[in-house]
Length: 307
Image (cartoon, rainbow, N blue to C red; front, side, top):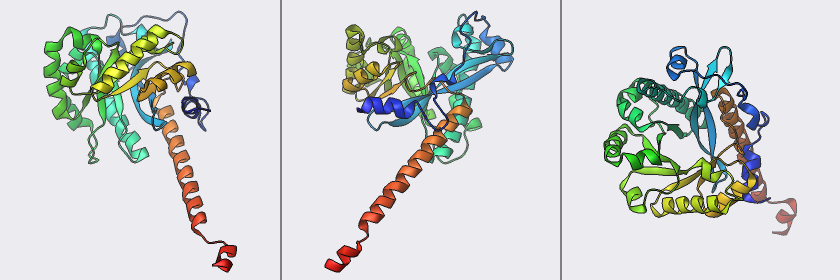
């Protein structure tokens, strides 16, 4: 079994059972609700999709996704409440996502014993409106470590408003949070990327899904990954749905990946179970390795007789 297949198998299952079926969303006759209504009624939840480090072959972080738990229709995807959302609702959603990510980051980091990165996808205008330092001060536990939070803004928004993106970047850096370019298809040049304090680039899901069998999609993915590396930042393949796609982005040199091949977005409870399972496996592996090392260091009775 090669490395990509090992990653997919090890990530898509745990002692808690398969992770992929965890997201249960009604697929027929989906209602349309307003984001403001969902926020006002407390229906919004934040779920987490794992990110995988393709070099270390291990969990490297997560992206948070909004869901609405309707009292009649159950769990609903963003397509039912995001279209037509007003600016005030988008700002409030961004704020709640940030607060939730701060709390989750503290929980995940305490469980793992190290800082755990979380990505939040927001609209640039909503992010600009947030009082980031105040939110961090009010919600971040005083653990001694800065929150490992990254905001994602789409490539299209950056291209369309390059003059307004710089004040946003100036606002993010003092707050200790980073920026990622999301939904990237390679519209920015290496020079532009080097001028922006970007932590990583996420290749557009529409290009990643099927790139293992579609040469045109593969060319775009390779182009974006190469741009990222030339600019000195990491590339993330978003939307991995098959082992063919995983093998393709692995060969391209993508640094990280996420998608339904590994796991659907998980509730916070499910994600904590995943982290506990991974921590338990890591402890067992470390104990086994230490045991083997100690055993190999002990001289056998035969060696003691012959030395």
